[in-house]
Figure 1: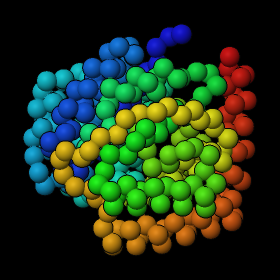
Figure 2: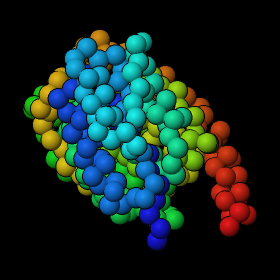
Figure 3: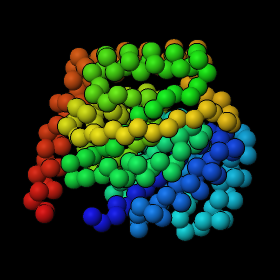
Length: 256
């Protein structure tokens, strides 16, 4: 099997202590698993030294790495959407820039690429967080899985390798962290195929989580209600994207 071409993206917000390591580790594994790849970062208005770190990484890897800085923050979901639009390779991978996942484990996902797979999704072997975050995280995860009827075991694991052409069919809208379940639900309802791979999760060594505060959780809960109405009750994604996915498959078969 030929090696896949891969775009690797890291969103960055005050991740100066980890983003350089994430990029370096990604490049390390990409040289093993791909002959055609790119790594890029969007800095979303960081107030620490993230931009200086990214500039130094660019100096060291001028041909393999690029980055953008945003004066007006896009938000987490906005960064992911912009990164998908910017991706130039066949497969698109993203994970967070805070090093709670090891970018070198991308290799485990690449090993599960096949003609029958559209998304290789990681799931946490064990969540390494303070106890209150573990409890809240599991409650949120199972609640989201239940109300949206999601088939993967860990929707909250942002360690994903996806065919870029999925997003020629599926349109994402979220600017916030709700993009996680929006993405999985829409891809699932369109009829794309998932496989899951266990990956390690590590304690945060630098910075703080942007999700675990009352105002953000409150906005997320309101957004969940809107998405539930659209994607479960009205079945917007199933009705809109399944026909497009079927047409995409027919085109791919005819081009073989």
